[in-house]
Length: 100
Image (cartoon, rainbow, N blue to C red; front, side, top):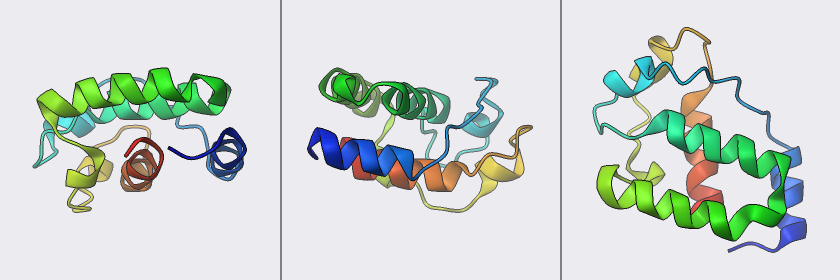
C-alpha cells in the first residue's frame, strides 16, 4: 500500500464522486462489480487517508465476492447509465491503484 503522503496526494488530485448509490451502473456492468461500494470507499478515503488500511480490508471483502476494480473492462456501459454522469471508469482505475 502507498504511504499516507502518497495517498493524500493521489486523493487530492482526484475528485470526490457524488454517487447516490442508486446502483444503475452496477446493473449495467458486464462484470457485475460493486461500483457504488468502491466509489463510497474512495470518497471515504478522500475524507480521511488515515483509514486506508481499514478501507482496503473492506475493499478486499467486496472484491472476494464480486470482483476487483481491475476486472473493469472500461466498456463505459456503467457511465452511460449513471444518472449523475460520473466518471466511473476513472473511479475503478483509481480504486485499483489505491486498494490493490
